[in-house]
Length: 481
Image 1 (tube, one colour):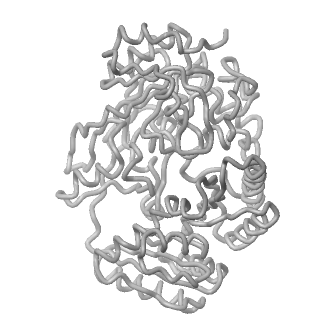
Image 2 (tube, rainbow, N blue to C red):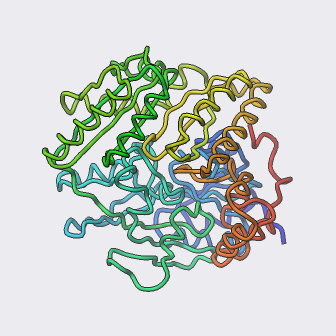
Image 3 (cartoon, rainbow, N blue to C red):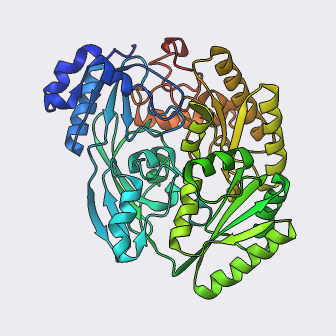
């Protein structure tokens, strides 16, 4: 049985919510038809619940009416995971934005999904605590979205991605029931369904509460900027630092094109003549960071670092991090749009893959700017372009496909933190075989047998679950702009 369009169902949802929290105006629905990616869908209706019980009632109503449901947080996702298709109902959890409880002795905090990532650290800073996963969009992205895509960030090199910092969560299933998964206990009984739900991209349920692990602030932090005449030298330094036994809190690289754009945008004093810059941060006790910083300096100079700049104070440190975390926004100085993937490659293949990305840019006559989590090989090649140029858009998609194939050819994986969504869904067979995809589809069907939750996302056609509801032919014109 096909999924029904949500456009004509506004009156039924007004029975459940304040009418002002049911959005059906075409312009407003169009705003919810996109996320931070370059995909665009078609939104039939937007509902704005403020409590778990309201979420349950909205999901039950959608199930009764056979309406597809797309959960949404801040809409900053970069893979089309929050893009609705075929007039689906968007259930926005942005208004569920309360920090419910803080337990310093564990330490952990219970928060609603609409809480912004950075707000958690701000709320517990007086306790000497913070929430470690720090996406570049942390001032705007929500915890629910972070859980959906298993988000990372610069400091996840040493501290781990979202999955390592979610102790438990509350999730509403496709039939409107509530599941409690995991919790603050060291080893909660039963299967680790929490681990399955983190990274589920809204295909297993709607997260309505998250218990996050809090991390003690380090006694001291030191941030260094190294610049090089070649990308090869920078990449060799990354491998050399890890090989020497140091795992920095963060280790980030930007190539010259990105460096120039960021410096013009932020004014952090970056060396714009360098082929690449490496931002390295170590933390720990004073003795520990003194030893590790000295080793980073020595390895960098051994591989040809022109200068090793140490942030003199907290203000300079924050300015350097502002430069790194403004990279995506800085692309606007080059072109109005960008397209990127976040494949992960072994560190030993960084140089070769970056060279191939340069070749891809030249073949397709495109500007590609690189910024990435160098320590774990998580690449972020940004293709700067103008989506009004149809021919250029075609070249962008062709280049994006070739970048993914180049990464997978050296043993890489499809995503380090952005998720699969729509944009990488049809590349899943490059990483998984038929049996692997079928097992994932079976798990999805166990939670959502009717395929109503975020259909057409993550798993490609032929994986069984979800395709009963929609087919690729049903995508609206312009989805893949």
